[in-house]
Image (cartoon, rainbow, N blue to C red; front, side, top):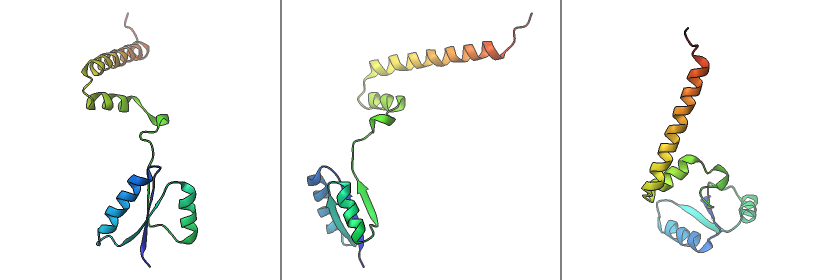
Length: 110
């Protein structure tokens, strides 16, 4: 029984081109299938097990987009003005946080 490699992506042309590339690699010995929706993946699963499943999608998901992603994107695009301003603001917030915590936790000597 051959191993199964399934590529699931909305951009079916890209997925098909990648599948052709993989099928040319004789050492992989995979049966490569392309689909554009999870319902097709479920149909394949009903027929036989999937050894490798590659699912494409939007990156990064906006629900997990964090400050580190924003800084990284600014760094990659060399938006130094935004990066510098954000770094200064972040340093101020950290400094103020440390000052407040120190004032609360360290008792004053009289």
